[in-house]
Length: 116
Image 1 (cartoon, rainbow, N blue to C red):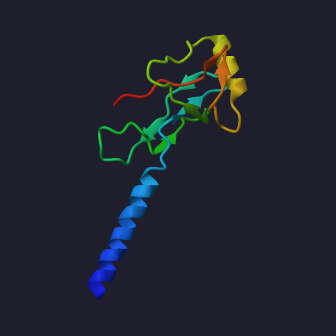
Image 2 (image 1 turned 135 degrees about the horizontal axis):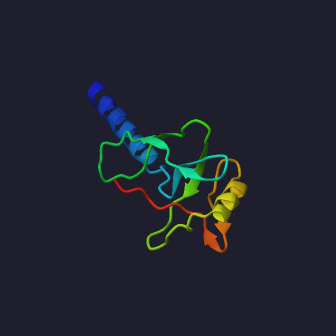
Image 3 (image 1 turned 90 degrees about the vertical axis):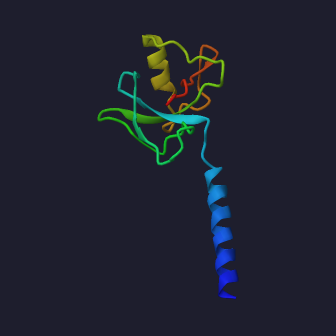
């Protein structure tokens, strides 16, 4: 009887863990913006043991920068080219720490996916 309860609890814990792993958003990433709107690289750590996963778990921006969520560019789409006008528009578009769904000149303000 105790073994069956232990097995049932283990199965429940495994299924709950698998369900929570599916919640990870793989369409956004963290970027850092300085006061002029320039993008700087965040310091990210991944606790995933797989080299196939590109998703970071914990990201920290260097001092004097703002941590912002941004959409990843879909395959075949390049992010807008960096320019002073784009940096100012990106800084103005940040809403509650997010650039998700923001556009500039008809193009999404997305970020190229990181490759390991």
